[in-house]
Image 1 (cartoon, rainbow, N blue to C red):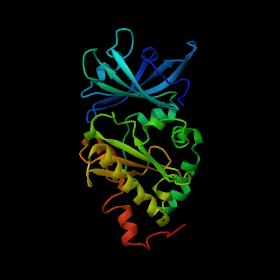
Image 2: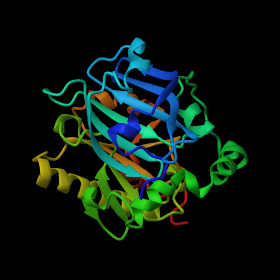
Image 3: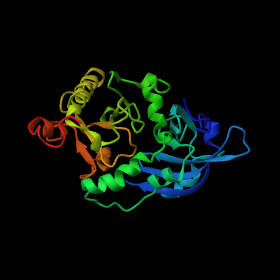
Length: 289
């Protein structure tokens, strides 16, 4: 179930008013812009973060995408869950779709900071730092931040997209994938256990969960798209973009995912990874609790 303010049509998209560019990424050929959409009543406006992907985009085009004479000529509604919505769009009528549009609406200051270009730092997180700073930070997040995940897990939204269902997790396409190009295949596994917020909450008792995710991911891409063993890169982010444990499942040949696989942020689920560590060194860390 999508948020009432989330745009769901071409006419709703064209009510967008551009404010500023949050980020531009030449590697992924995308722009992230900040602005507002008109509400359904039309007397108020709601803030939104919009990410637009294309084979090549230039920052000077940012104010020109939406409107009566905008660059976007046609759209196809993809899906909407809580505050997240995405469309496929065309820059002309008689051509293949050109861009994918992801929208966060309403967007909070937290969303704006997340999508704004910023300097990256490597932090060595000690157990003390985690307990005193990071853990309270994670626990302070309101449930609304992961409401879209709850909507999926409880069957409210995106049920037609789900590829694998088990008592412990779901696997479905990530909103970053265009659902068409197998080379850029991008899936996500969402676990049902709400107590696992991040990699820090994993224990040896979760080894079966990680193995099951790996097995089912390899099985579904083989059955659906003919991708053999070794064709996937599976990894976990720390820090993650949202604190509900999930695993990224990406075609190993998709170079557009390289930014999300930065050393220090991405932790591989496959060979020489968490699974291997717990299998080869069972005494490492807590064994069960």
